[in-house]
Image 1 (cartoon, rainbow, N blue to C red):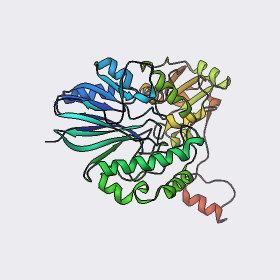
Image 2 (image 1 turned 180 degrees about the vertical axis):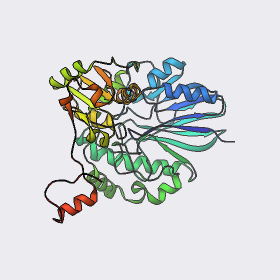
Image 3 (image 1 turned 120 degrees about the vertical axis):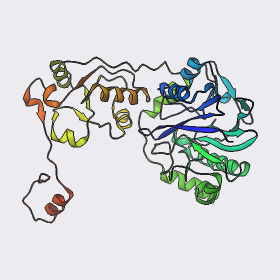
Image 4 (image 1 turned 180 degrees about the horizontal axis):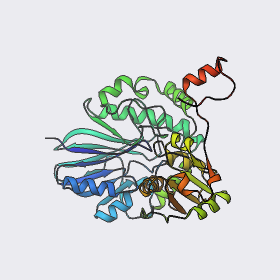
Amino acid sequence: MSADVHVIATSSLGDHSYLATDGQSAVVVDPQRDVDRVLSLAGRTGVRVTHVVETHLHNDYVSGGLELARLTGAHYGVAAADQAPFPHLPLSDGDVVEVSPVLRLRALATPGHTFHHLSYVLEHREAVEGVFTGGSLLFGTTGRTDLLGAEHAATLAREQHASVRRLSALLPGGAAIWPTHGFGSFCSAAQASGDSSTIERERQVNPALRLAADAFVTQTLAGLDAYPAYYAHMGVLNLRGPAPVDLRPPALISPEELRARLRAGEWVVDLRHRTAYAEAHLAGTISLGLDGPMATWLGWLIGRGAPLTLVGRTPEEVAQARRELVRIGVDHVSAAAAGTPRALAADPAQVRSLPTATFAGLAAALAGDVPAGLPAPA
């Protein structure tokens, strides 16, 4: 009988957290900040969280590890070399975390994504079942190496190559790989492929295991592109120790106050789908629908601490957006409004629409078969 590994997906950020258990005790790897999801999973499965570990200081989200450890009384393991100022279990290469008499983690130093990155081999009854690889070995790719500064990218890429090869050499081919990043995350050096993998599969497809070091470094550096501006703040917050999360809903405001915020040039974000926004919206609002990576784009664009108002169809949409934003450290939402654009307009003239077109209509326009201007969809 093997250990159970439960995935806690955060698709909007392209990340996975994990809860591994022997049926009684559990360890959580790389939890997101809204730890109520983890506590709910532990409650449903009837297990006690005894340990929480981080593979690295995350650059794409605020960790919930410190808060989860506080709430559960679990030991909180982070890389000793990071010298975190809060109470923690300092972990280094070769250290063993005894989750229970039959379940343990073995830490392996795998620098590359960060200087002090750790992976954790999951062993159940002394048999290797898989490895939590964080931002190191991903599905068909590896973690990007430039998040700590472009000046370190080449050095870390070379270390990433060595780390992945170390994992391949130490682990059996059937060992499962459980990465934190790579599901659409900007922490990935290239687009990850598939939704599961093993060491043996990665030996066949992963550039770090197919290319020599120099070629891997060249390919990795050539593929790095821009990443969200808010990443610059995440590592600092995680090293300092994030504050407990606050998911209380912001106050709902009147149409008159909403208009005043728009006139002041504040950020007012419409959370509805872009097609609904095109049909009708309040002038001055910005469309960042919950159906896409709303938090990523907003975190990329908005200034830290800028006044922010969220507008959704329902209070539940606003609550969902607030949950996504606290994951990237946007803790303060000034206000919120819920309803249709016409119901939220202090003046009917505030309601605007955008012209739309079908692909067939655009093709016809490009071919000169219709008069100038975009046709409305049928």
